[in-house]
Amino acid sequence: MTTIVKAASAAQFLSLVPHLVGCVPRDSLVLIPFAGGRSLGGMRVDLPPEDADVDPLSATYVGLVCRVPDADAIAAVIYTDDPFASAAAGRGSTAAGRGTTTSSSMPRQDLARALLLRADECGLRVTNVLCVAPDGWGSYLDPECPDEGRSLDDLDRPSGIHPELPAAPVGDQRAGALLPAADPAERERVARALISLDDGVRLICGPDRGRPSEPAPPPSARVDPRALATVCALDDLPSLFEDALDAGAGERDPYLAAAMIWCLSRPSLRDIALVQWCGDLSAGDDALQAQLRWEEGEEYPTYLAMHMWGEGGRPDPARLESALDVARRAAATAPRDVRPGPLSACAWLSWALGRSTHAEHYAEEARSIEPEHGLAEIVCSFVQAGHLPDWAFRAPGAR
Image (cartoon, rainbow, N blue to C red):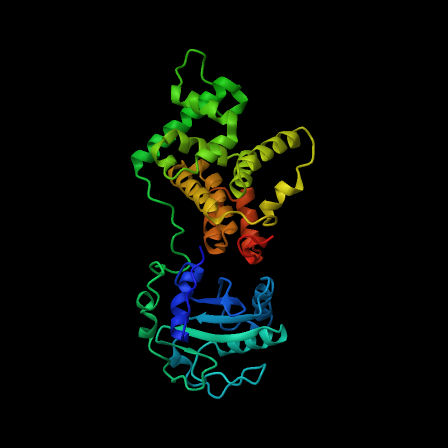
């Protein structure tokens, strides 16, 4: 369901921004596109360095808003660690475009003026350009803004103004990227299950199907029956990946966690999981068959591969969230040498959800263990190039 909340003032609007972007931004620029007076979500980018050339950067930022269908207006919020006091020496600045005069005591005025100019050139109406600093807040379009800014206390009352909203997010854009806690006993259980699973795979499928550096167990060796049952579950990967989405399943069963680690550490199986989690069980069946045909020399279907590059139909965010929980739990419990696989899945799923900051964190964690990990390198290249999935610019249900 869509919750419609009206903001009667700039302060009330600022109290809603964390709800739009899922965090309390820090050292960030937040862009909020509008269509017909209603916001269409929020985009957060890192604030450029003080000495950066803001003109081309602003063109890129406003260009992101222009990619949102039906967007006809924009609001921008600059979150900076620079206080109002440090900018008090700069006076009487005039913003380019429409002859708008910016408040003279606010930090990052060059960026605000460049954003106004680019929005004007693109035909976007500017509803407001705001600044939140450590010692105050204000609007660049408000000539009456005090030199010291307005009180931050104005922004601390969202629950009273908007009782219909859940609690505001806590933490900045980097919060929430840490893996869930896994105690040593849990990691030990999963590690043992993973060894047993490898033994079961080599016993049933042949010695070349497990870890190549380890010999297959002798025929007389006992393999845990739970490992053999898990090997049988691998025979129907789409069902396994679907069952894994059940909340907390990986926490209850170390063998399911081991199966997820085992699969996510193998690119061909990992890609089947990601395609399925972007779609449904039938998409997983299609991806599995496509993978088998590709291994026989056929081309991989474009309609399945395109999701990996951020194109195609918009995935269900709740489904991706569940998949991310699975991948995060797998990464948290995986032995270090196989952790890059689950971490790279975390990176891709975070990127697919529009959380590039988290995506880069997971990808770099994977690369710290395996520097040339393929998917981790791809996600890092996406983030560094500012590439977002195409569906990030479309509303739910839009084609």
